[in-house]
Amino acid sequence: MSVFFTSEPAPHDPQLAELWELLENETFREAVRLAESVCQDANAPIEFFCGLSLASGELGYYADAERIARGAIRFGEGHWRARHALSVALMHQGRFMAALDSLGFYHTPDEIYLARAQVEKMGRYTDSLRITLEDALLKDVPPAIFLYLAYLYGSLAEHIADWPGRSAGVTEVRRFGGYLEVWERDAARHRGTPYGEQVGQHVAAMRRLLSETR
Image (cartoon, rainbow, N blue to C red; front, side, top):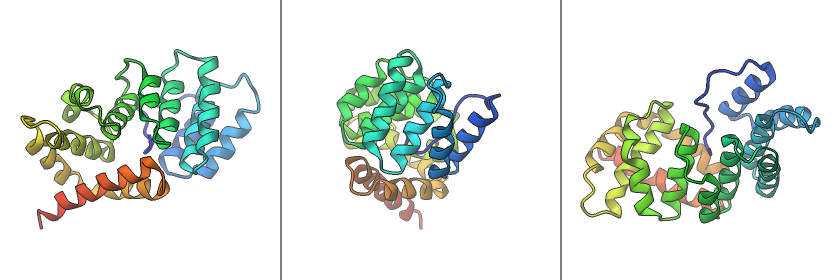
């Protein structure tokens, strides 16, 4: 995540559709309540357990988020949402190598793509980040997500001397800068964690880029 979005069509299950809406609207306590009620049934769809893990992490219950995600992995190891939830839970704790391992070699769908890019940036896995971000500016994702990907894309110039993408990345950051508050809230939610510290640094860097235009 840590900013939730879904790349899939709206689910037919009304409770799952409500859960996704609650996560998108950052109403995490309500999301936990809904997911917990559904997950009383151990045979509930795995998406509810993944949503419960994500919402728990956004409320700062990182150990619970990891435990729930690992439970989802046991029941659906091949399900991308379970791997995504576990990666996010580990990323929040600063366990970047473990978070990357949980994603395997997957780069899709876009939720996995974002989590991978964040983990590779925060863990300083520059070589793999360069490969991941090759098509970052072609992604059809919500504006706040595109803003962050554009920042990551341009910021590769900090690590790769001949990186040609800084100008394009900065241009897109400035174009989508109105969505920075989404990431400011994310950094505030996770203040005091390795993840929150790094997102805060990224937010500060984007602010500097935006101020240069004034």
